[in-house]
Image (cartoon, rainbow, N blue to C red; front, side):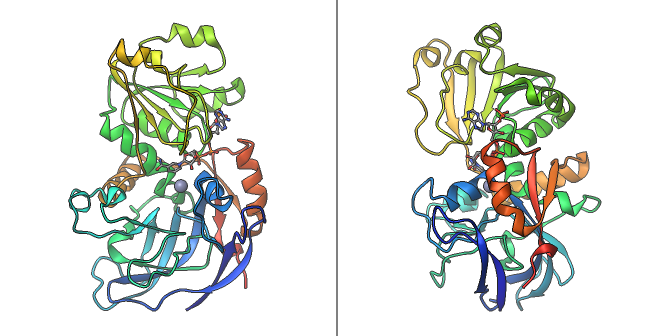
Length: 348
Ligand code: NAP
Ligand code: ZN
């Protein structure tokens, strides 16, 4: 099937209209028309080849909401007309110990990303949600609970699960003290989820600009991360800190803020951070960890949680042809708090 989208052709060129083919339906495939796609900072990192290894042309987008237009003969979970969602994963081996534990994101044999990775069967490079149509095997297509505004669901598929997952892994709930570093797409979802789970939430932001928003999103406190005295006063007062900063930065100011046995989870920067000091780790058994998105079952759990608790991201709707401007604004942290592309704006 022929389709259209927006692609990066080189690390430095703006995204531009791009025509390509979607594969014919396999027996376990679901085809959909894409209605909305969120804009993740990872899309920008990948388009610019910040992490190395990007294959061009790159069609980004992994926060996808679509309507099913056709299903393969063996599909039982979805039917034509359903509104469905697709996140960062479109395939994995399904038989290793990690896949069996519903941790497809840690598949021993390598998971397939929604864009920019080789398809397991044909080897062709996957293309993401900045496009009109998508074909995905049914196990990786998610159900959207009734009653959620589908124009705001997209960002849950990456920003949502990436913050929901560590909150669940480290047991956030009533009585726990959770910090969130960086109030962007991921950060604002971390705040909403932690608050909905009953935790006490503190946002660390670089300036006071977003303080009022942070409180409105559900935070109990805001700390300005550049304010050394304020930071010192918060020593040993967190059980979990989720760090969403997208670039190389210094985690040392956050380590003494963890209580004994507490954990700083890095979900933002892929690559080096400033040299960490081991003293707070040794004198307090504090930990540094990382976390990658979440598995399919947990993503469905997260969507169902959002349906029950009425949790949705704050979105700014854009047209597909505004994507380059959106990338520039994201680079300046000028997003409140996630761009979503209305795919009806993408015309042949
Ligand atoms: P975003 O919307 O741009 O938000 C990042 C926030 O970090 C900004 O709003 C800003 O908050 C803060 N920040 C930005 N530059 C900073 C700097 N130089 N120093 C300190 N803080 C800074 O990005 P996002 O979409 O949330 O993504 C965040 C990162 O997570 C990206 O690197 C993305 O690739 C990564 N990611 C990881 C996973 C995973 O599975 N682990 C999944 C998705 C995305 P303040 O203005 O409040 O300081
Ligand atoms: Zn993402």
